[in-house]
Image (cartoon, rainbow, N blue to C red; front, side, top):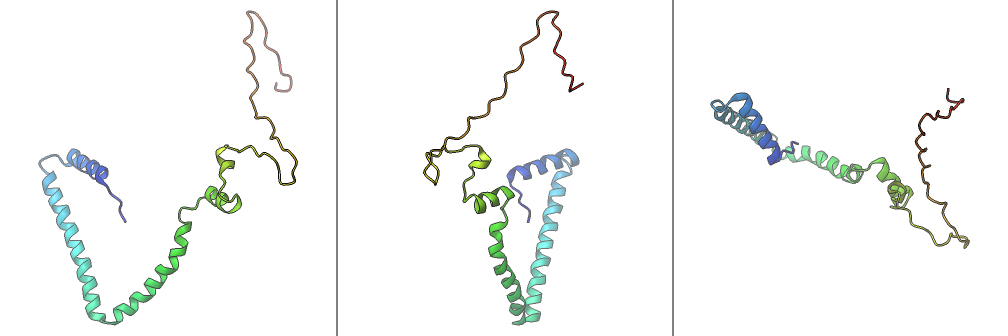
Length: 143
């Protein structure tokens, strides 16, 4: 549920050190560890008590949950599916050159005629700077 690595832990310790100070930090860490241990013990105790109270019926309760997990497994393949990945996979047969701009130059089309793609777009050259005391051109459509 919580994906915390070492960098996050270091940030939390440094933040706690700044907020609590060095004299109260060991007590806060001790209290947090005891609280987490107590919550874990409560959860384990509740599970074992439920298992003891229900006996073999506990496994019958778990069966529908396992069936739901099995039904969700095929859906996990769509978890990382973005619109771009869906289009690439299903419509373009995995060819992502449309999105990357790296097109291969085909030698010929399926009907046998030679095909040459249109020339690549090149932006127009910027206008030359105006000479001294030269008036800029007026675009009457834009004014």
